[in-house]
Image 1 (cartoon, rainbow, N blue to C red):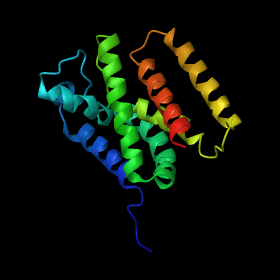
Image 2 (cartoon, rainbow, N blue to C red):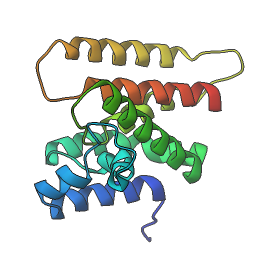
Image 3 (tube, rainbow, N blue to C red):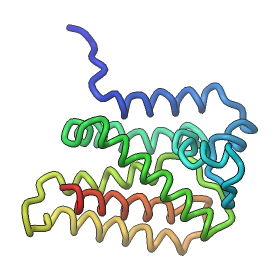
Length: 178
């Protein structure tokens, strides 16, 4: 039996995220692997940070939490939509979330939580048919949005905005692309 690199987008993301956490200093991660806190279209690093922040994580618990979801759901989505389409969804989610965050807030994002939540909601669209919305999608959306709404009330360093934005973008992709 041989080992197969069965999900190139998801596995590359996982390996890259682990390497960044193991090898990059906190200073490097702050400078290059966190989303921009402000819009700065004249700075070339701004464009890198619109995407690179999804591969940076604050620690192993943060990374493992995101990778658990992404490695469970991601390969199924990559098989269903294809590597190119899933990569497009990830990039659109990352850039949209980073731009909205920089526009509305003055903090940086780090981690793939928005991507994980995009995949959660997108996966519930896996059995959609014409003019039908799966009940599983409604339940996942209600539970997801409800838990994030409750979490907003707690003081922590977690960006519920990125979770909600990623989830809404995933739901939108699932609705319009399916």
